Image (cartoon, rainbow, N blue to C red; front, side, top):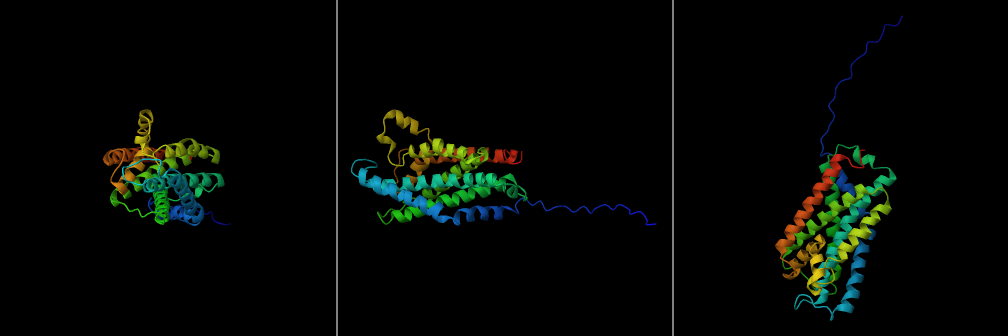
Length: 270
């Protein structure tokens, strides 16, 4: 007769719950995701900005008055750089999340020991890198048309990072809210595109009627472009310190909201 087998308790092995262990991997994944299709994610926006530069510079060069002696073509370049950065910083996390949700591999992002802060930092840092990469490429191409160098590089860098951080956070929020590409397209078509084009990319707001000047001051993206342009020309429509304060507050607000959604597991874990 076989003696009964005594049940044995399994050893209690503490799992490695180091929340930071998966952060570099997720960040690398997000960076490689847009780099592997760089013709689509970097070259295409540069070509689009170049077309805007050629068309608007040729048509409006002698018809639009901006900052005193600043040529309109020179005025246009920082605006196109920032517009490209904003749109691509938004696209990076939003498209990544919606693709992961639709293809069903979002679970592989949630399984590793990642805190919600790690998720936020990985997605937003990748958005900042992509946005700045596109902006630098636009600037490099524009140098073939007109030599333009920043007079205040630190202002340029500060507004570039904060602006891409704003749109990266907003892209993360849009990616969490959207369950299909149609919903994400609504964010792009009815929020991002109008706010970008009405932010002073192609004009100084002082050329607008008083009513539309007031409306422009309620557009946070106006301050990103105006402050960024100050870094190149030392002139702007509003004080650069005011622009920096507005941009910083908007970034903190959107970042806090995105982190709160991630912490609650909104449309991720429930």
